Length: 217
Image 1 (spheres, rainbow, N blue to C red):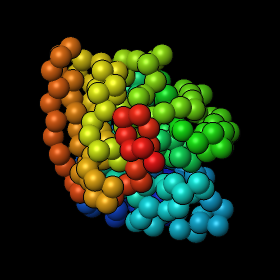
Image 2 (image 1 turned 30 degrees about the vertical axis):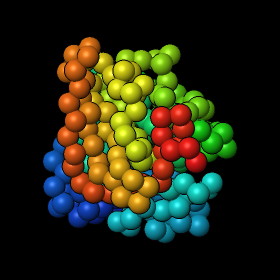
Image 3 (image 1 turned 90 degrees about the vertical axis):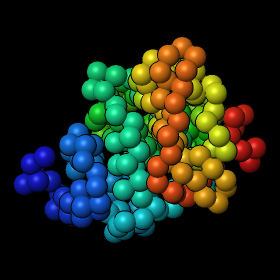
């Protein structure tokens, strides 16, 4: 990553919050350095866009802490020529990062107003490889499956079976899994048509994934 071409505050975030804490994937670091996080937070919060914490959005949602976004994407191992599914669009920040990493991206949001504003922002910033759809993220988006990577920005009580079945062979689902108050970042990998592996990583706290295969409310 050529830091001389970056916003200096963003470059500092990449160095101090990501690389210094163990993020090693050069493609993820490069994407985090290119995407302007301040474009995806409310105007009143833009001065806090690069702080090491989640920030509130409309409708009780959040934009995740930069480190957790980077760690999620690192664990997903998104191929450059692949297709990715983003669960819980929110403001569109993670979808934009996926747009830098993958050839095709579908991002799904259950709240229509958030989906519409994210769609407009992503179009404004030129992410023509990202499609925003409104729907239940806990059951994914079968119309564009299979996906090489599925990543979620909301917590589920367990790995949704429908999402697992939408993975390509070798694909990875990265999702916070646990209770409403504490989760672990979890990777589910599809080894074959019927075989999946599961590995747990960092503890985390996310808003709940509401839907048929998530929380009821």
